[in-house]
Amino acid sequence: MNRGPGVYSNIGDKAKDVLYKDYAKPSPIHFHYKFMDWNALLSCKVAEILPGFKSVFKCTIPDSGKVELQYLNNFTGITGCIGLLGSEEGEYEPVVNFSGLIGASFLSLGGNVAFHIPTRSITKLNAGFNFNTAFLEASLTLHDSFDTLKATFYHEVNPLSKTAVATQVKYSLSLKETGVTIGAQHAFFPETLVKARFDNYGKAGALIQQGFWQRFFVTMAGEMDFGATEKVPKFGVSMALRP
Image 1 (cartoon, one colour):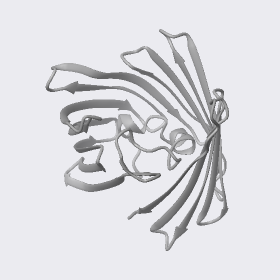
Image 2 (spheres, rainbow, N blue to C red):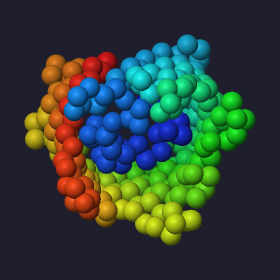
Image 3 (spheres, rainbow, N blue to C red):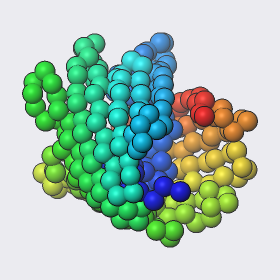
């Protein structure tokens, strides 16, 4: 079993999965047809191309694509990535990203930096740490060049039914605003997962995911903004084929 810290993007992963994964939220850039917005995500991971090295390819159509090289051992996780990031004007610009994580599986800390090649500017500067035990996973991260502070908490209530609760608290230092999102998940059957979330701005979301043959998953998700002037619900359907 891998006892290393993983990579920087793994910080708070379990809480982020409960609160954000598979909900009805399209990418900033997407295809539009009549009343539907859609995009596709393709990913491929090649393990152990060299001892300790992994290669990851991800492409979100039409949003972005990237190739990432990871180096993992018992105490560090280092990643280097180059990709193309799309804009609403239809242009794709190259971005280089580096991140590092040190520690162990129960406690780790690291940082992440992204460099925009055309303007030669730093577009992302993050740092954080992760604490992971059998009872609780907690993380604290700084985003937006250290202007936004995020804390996440995840607790698995019952591993057999995948029952878990999660919370994220986000605070903007410049705006003096605090956002709180809470969520939970539960599997009524081994291949049927239900998730729900709610935040202090009045947005609520829920989804039901059905798996087939342990490889193919269909997700139906919905979201409602109760704080908006026009309360129009959003619905989405996604399909995923996983190894």
